[in-house]
Each structure stands twice: as structure tokens, then as C-alpha cells.
Length: 261
Image (cartoon, rainbow, N blue to C red):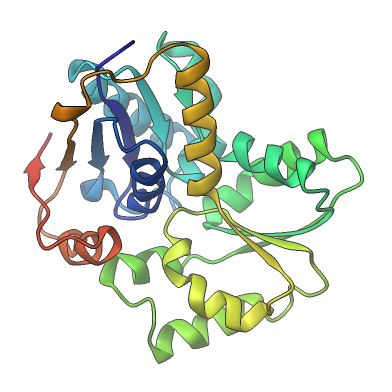
């Protein structure tokens, strides 16, 4: 058993969609979440910069004595996961591998991927999908406006509908649409209206939560002191709309947030 918290980080509020799924599937666990709001967005930054940012956030979480880390960010997963796994000894899980595992098990071959410009540019999703599903047809689309809109809470208005229509109008004849940025589940309702009921819209947070649960059970890392389980949230910049979006997403009255450097 291991009563330490699970660490999670993202560039902003998007990773809270992953935190929400982890809390749902692992109610007895404690969590520490870092939103690197001072460096948002990651999607427009170079690979070198993303690696540096990920290293700093992981060092923060290690200093808080977490037992494992979830990179709840598509850009960071696609550009820095392997480097972080080589650099640090504790388990580090990203959002791509668990999602590709689901795609293969569900026999989904015509796959759309929407993500940040940096993630699409890295080709990380398509490479991992085709490694596991060689016959897969993958249609990629960068959607750089969606993450900033999510940070502002613009997830169910006319601007969001217009942006999603424009981004998705060329993605046709697919079995599944991977929301390759953790901010994008905030737009799931509008995305569903755009692509139709027959497309499997994949929230990577759900896949990551299943992977984390399997890992901690297999490695006997469950928290056996669930009466003291809690969630701590830290931001690198407090001057943002994170609190309002997080409260709505986590369905809580208040969110206690602390500053971290």
C-alpha cells in the first residue's frame, strides 16, 4: 500500500478533466494538481521549452512526495513523455498510450485526432496509433483556439460553436474522434452535435484513469488511509480564470488554490 498522492500537471485548466476522471475512478486516492498557468499555452512552444517546463513541474511534484505522475497534457505527452521517463525514476503516465490501447481494443480504424498545433506538428498521436494499429486511417487537425477559449470558460457559446464547426468541417467518415488536448472535453457537447451520434468521442482522461487504476492495483500502491484523502491544487499564476472553470467542471462550490513557483 502507498498513501502518497498521485501527481498531475497540465498547462492550465484542461488537466482538470483528467483529475475529474481520476477522482471518479479512484475516490480513495489523494491528488496533487499543478496548473502551469504562467506558461500557458504549451501548444505554441518548442519541444526544448516543453521539456524544460515538464522537468520543472515534475520536480515540484517529487518535492511534494507523490507516488506517480500523470502528464495531463497532450502537447507535453507527445513532446516530452519519453524524456521525462528517462530522467526520473517514479512512474510517469501520459495521455496517448492508454487512449491508443482503447482504440485497438475497440477495433476503431478510422480515427480523427484534434489537438494543439504543437501536438499535431509533433505527429505523436498518428505515430503511436499506427504503431499499434497499422491499418488505421488517421485524420489530424490542429485546433489552436480551443484551449485558450476553454481557459476563458467559452465552451458553450456561439463562438465555440463556430470555431468547432470550422475545425471539424473536413473531418468526415470517422469511427472515433480523439480529443487529443485535455481542454477539449469541455467542448464535448458541441463536438457531439458537429460529428454526430455514431462517432465515438474519446475523452483521454477516462482512458488515463483506467490505466492509473490498473497500475496502482497491479503494483499494490493503493491508499489504505482513505479517510485522509484529499486534492490539492497549485497554479504558477493566480491571475487567470482557472477557479471559475474548475468549480464548474468539478461541480464544487469552492476550489482551494495555492501559488507555486
